[in-house]
Length: 289
Image (cartoon, rainbow, N blue to C red; front, side, top):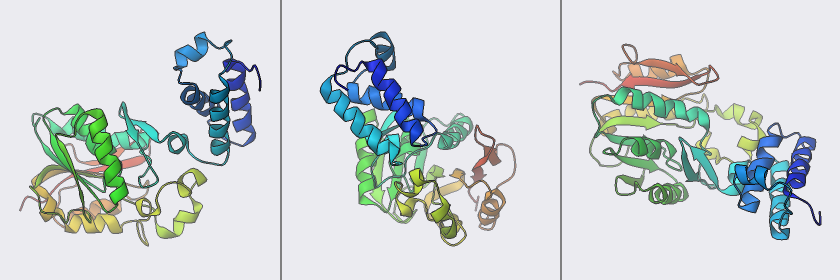
């Protein structure tokens, strides 16, 4: 690889990942080369005939080796873009997916004239949902809770990095079991994979996302039951609820919420699909009594 140009390195990386059955080989190779070289996409194009620095070449190969073994790009680089924000991720946090942006958009569409809401994010992980909402609502404040110290450290670091740490707090808690003011908005992307389905997940997920962030119990619905039971501790009467769901769980989650008195049908409520057309989010209102 002595004297290899940036363009040659990119082509080699793409071919290497393709040989290892990485479906997004071209994109992944480019992102990893950008990270290894410190160059933007535009700079790679403009300076493709320049030689890659030896240290950058070694780092790029290290990245390629990790990706070829199924490690996600975000895990290799320790960061993930979500809602236009660059967030740190670690082995303690779920890797935020673009599909979850459907939940963020749903909340922003429904906040309406209330521009100073208090938001609770249950199972916050890296803080992706809460921090995206706070970045879009400059007067909002929020509290994220999680059972993982490591996840909370990452969420706090992300809040500082994007400049909302004065409006975001994070606390160790089992869902809503923490004394605080009741929220205008409650959001969550809880674990929703049925335990028996975990071995069948893609290796990018199964091998790198923390199991506690995936395991939804025997039927994948246990976290929703626990959240529903804790709504009086978390939500103001009539508060907006927005929860990510698995593709076959809409009716079941709506049933759990309606069973505690939440409104699951009506204007602005119901099931929302992601950009791929899959059921992704349930929007509801907390019990009004």
